[in-house]
Length: 341
Image 1: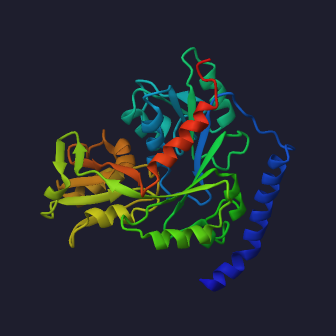
Image 2: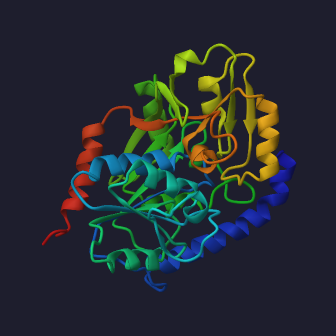
Image 3: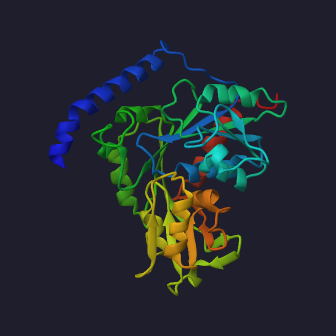
């Protein structure tokens, strides 16, 4: 492994230099970044996937969605549509992508849009008669053409960006110095019993600026699984009568939470598009047993031939303390804008 990393070092150095130059040009205003007169909050990471952006966006929707008109804007990764799309009754995971479709299914009171060009996407949202008052950008930390008012940077416990290297030597999309753009840094997927001492060790390791705020969060699993056939308590899934299925970046915590000694686990790549042959193969392997999957996978599979076997386990991101401080920071940022003036 060390030998391979040495071989990749020149390529990582070149990649890092290119992204650093790009960031420098945006920081100095040489490359144009568009600002907007509404609160724009960007949630993202320095690494490639697996830090828990979706639960964090959902937390912000819960915090702000009852008080303001909120819209989410995503790229719509692996969708089969092009350009700007605003979710409506005809939407599905193929049109929006799995994560945006999940937002649309869970939060019918907000607007959900996709556009690879985030600047155009925001302009399209704001051109509507019923325009949003707050826009949440999903996975847009490196999208420098939009200058968000507030950046929330996520980094996973046990896989901190300070321990990683840039692509292709590691998994970082840019050098670690990019973390300085964030006002809020959240260490996600922490153990529920993370000690204050270890939190301080991580804080020292990250070496954040005095203006930045650090939070720690954990995954909170629902006590129920849900599907078209009804709902079941998780504790009922103890008789070896179910199969686990996940097509997400880092499924290990999901598997570990539900798996017993003999549960079959089916693993697929992140955002995997299940073909008809895949579905038939899964149907054969599962032999009519219940299939418990992630919420993101469920929105892609809920209308398939597996629908009557299929259940999903919802999750939430839960802060380990400082919830009031986090909410105050978000609310104060929003209140700077004359949204309804």
